[in-house]
Image 1 (cartoon, helix red, strand yellow):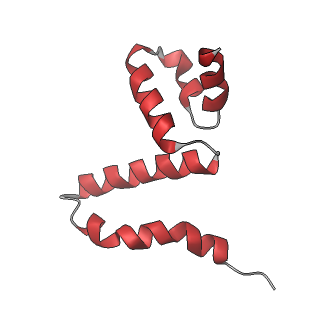
Image 2: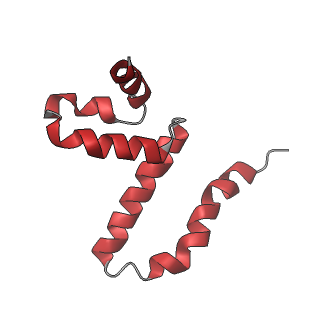
Amino acid sequence: MPDNNAAERALRGIALGRKAWLFAGSPRGGERAAFMYSLIVTAKMNDVDPQAWLADVLARLPDMPMSRLPELLPWNWPRTAQRIAA
């Protein structure tokens, strides 16, 4: 019989943060929090450490041309990070 344990575990962080997010300050603040949460979850779903990914992306973003931005997406980042480290 199928269960929904994986889905419930994935939503646990949202439920735990609900009270903190209640006071995001404004609707725009809530949108920003949702945007950041989606970035972090996307990194996790692609087996990327969110903290390392965000730190690297934020450091390289100012000097990155628009044509190369797809390299910084979580599903492309491990290859880009390995190429830079080598």
